[in-house]
Length: 233
Ligand SMILES: [Zn+2]
Image (cartoon, rainbow, N blue to C red; front, side, top):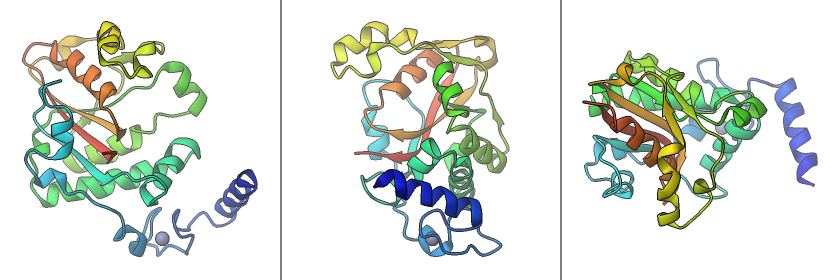
């Protein structure tokens, strides 16, 4: 039955593209993607205001970060999961753009430490996966954030190597064996003495972000912060 509902959903989107992606009501002209009444129901963490927040703690002892935060709490079956799956599997890149817009405004409003970064780097996908999906779900989020923070997005300086077993393995010791081979920095000098903001969709174990951050931190004088759309605890 769900395939049928998906088709209906796609048709509704084709006919009424200007509806809220969550409740399907008609959007006001000033609204993009999500209507105001859905937006206020979203589970904001406000972790960017909280030192030693749970996203920072998740990576403690694994990689040294300047700042880390998440826009939303991620709960299965709830609104945020709906948003993320539209973004990743339904070609709704505009959802990422909307979330970047929301978070960019919050960070500016709160004069957040995140304003001190130099570059914004979306976690790259394996080339194969990106070809299959047609886009990297973090790109629009990164671009919109960059627009608000007046920073540059650097998405072509890091390559993600073909899938390794490390990402699916739960065993942390096995994971360490290849972790440094997952990502490759093409021009390390670009990141020398720079503060890099890594952005991703959902943080769960944090293994991917940890691997990427460790790779960047091999570069002299570099610093890393992390911002994600949603955090699963
Ligand atoms: Zn709505």
